[in-house]
Amino acid sequence: MGDRLTEEEKQPKQTSPTPYGDMFDEALPQYLAIGMPYDLFWDGEFGTKRAFRKAYQFRMETEQRIADRNNWYMGQYIMSALAATALRVAGFNTKGGLPDYVDKPFMDRYEEKKKEETRKQQQEDQQRLAMAMFQAMATKFNRNKEQKAVGTGQ
Image (cartoon, rainbow, N blue to C red; front, side, top):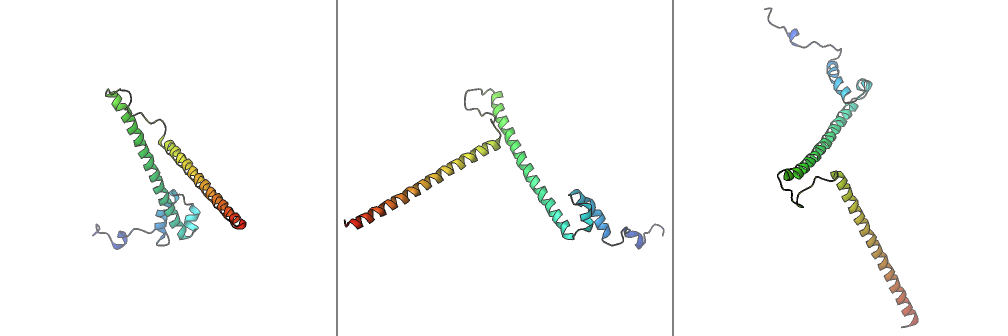
């Protein structure tokens, strides 16, 4: 009989005065780790806890996306290095045709390409504006010519 647990011994002992206090005590370190201040955890509204949790999840997802993209770029650099060296080591040392290691970071290339596209777009916009102004001047010239022709009786 001494080896059997009674109902009282089966239930974990409650250390806080309220039934939910133990859950809050267990959750406190998690909220402190995600940056929630101690006073706000205990004295703030419940909605702030949810907001901190969602903000933490959003931050983790964003950091994961950034890390994933950085890892992808690292793989691109490695592939470029392997392509540039493997053929040379294998003896394909002919002039031309062999890939070189990238001369500048990929993001610099992207930014240059974006600047070039922006410059081309601005040129196209200027050409459209010049064409519209020319058409407006031609229309005005033709109207004035017609008015003079009507005024002189031709």
